[in-house]
Length: 189
Image 1 (cartoon, one colour):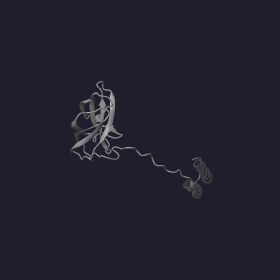
Image 2 (image 1 turned 30 degrees about the vertical axis):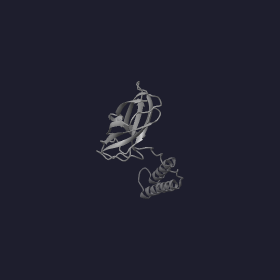
Image 3 (image 1 turned 120 degrees about the vertical axis):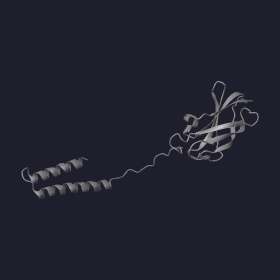
Image 4 (image 1 turned 90 degrees about the horizontal axis):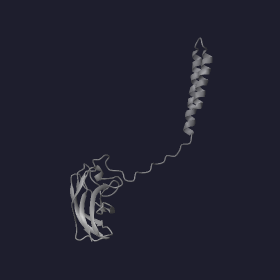
């Protein structure tokens, strides 16, 4: 930038001296313009030969949502049942019905996948255990699907609330967008 200012001032001084204050001389204006043009050409050549910093890729976003906005977060879990007695510190099985009320397909695997999240809370509302149950397949808009559930159980016997909700991994829970999670009171033996 400093070189440009010096060249511009030099061109004006040379042009002003040759042109004079009273009577412009066309040949003098041409000399000043040539001087200034030569400087610009030299500056462009120098700029093209300057070392260029290597371009580095931005860090990838770990799990981008498949849809921008809140339309993805429309769905329900209902009709949850657990098979038999629920033993403490083990796994229990069951099933529930999910419904995709969004305008897009929920992916069962990969970035932006939808999962069933679950949490066990005690009678005081304290979180005791949480986990995930994967969807068995992609779920198209408007579809209902009965899904199997395999859930870890709390390590201590007692009465718990089992909360089940849909989520987009690394993004948000559906309950954060005004969807009601499914709740069951379960006696863990």
